[in-house]
Length: 224
Ligand SMILES: C[S@@+](CC[C@H](N)C(=O)[O-])C[C@H]1O[C@@H](n2cnc3c(N)ncnc32)[C@H](O)[C@@H]1O
Image 1 (tube, rainbow, N blue to C red):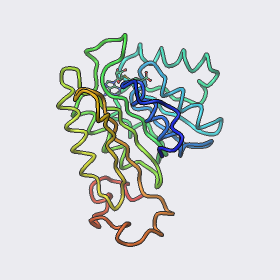
Image 2 (tube, rainbow, N blue to C red):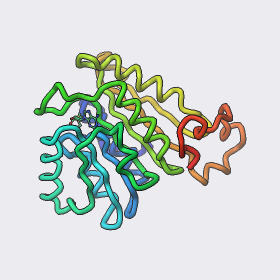
Image 3 (tube, rainbow, N blue to C red):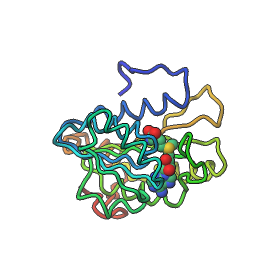
């Protein structure tokens, strides 16, 4: 995935987001279903809407009305509002709104820049949403999580996300943690998840089986 990176690594925050977009951009195409779990100002929602085409759909969640207003404005200006369902509810309830399995999820945690900093993502609801996402992911589907560590409460959330990601069954999910190794310990990091695809069934058994525990044991619908 790191061939021909379209970004440079010198900026921290912005490039974590662009790397996440690159990760999702590799698998999403016209007709796909994608979720922006934290719509915020709509940058990721717009990016996803561009990828899924006329025949695809993006579901974008945010608990702040102002965030969804900003997202809607951005989509309308680009002429892509028709591809997106905006949902003013927490991502921890996203299973109530999604019609079926999903190709890609983007999470960009923390608070809305320029918005209400008290409405930030929280460990408990973030974990609920990530578990739902892992369970609803199609074979070959991907999840990106941009995790911030600098604001109050971020340490607890980042540890919870890492723990959840590292507990995912390696026979069903590939999981990467991407850190900026020469930056402050407070720099954001990325968690990248990919669910094995049907073509991965041809892998050598030792590469394919992990610990042989199926994700469906933990996440309903996780076996795809
Ligand atoms: C860092 S911002 C997202 C930035 C956004 N991806 C963009 O492109 O501008 C995080 C967003 O998560 C939202 N948020 C906080 N808790 C949430 C929850 N439980 N469900 C959905 N969104 C939530 C905040 O309101 C905030 O807008």
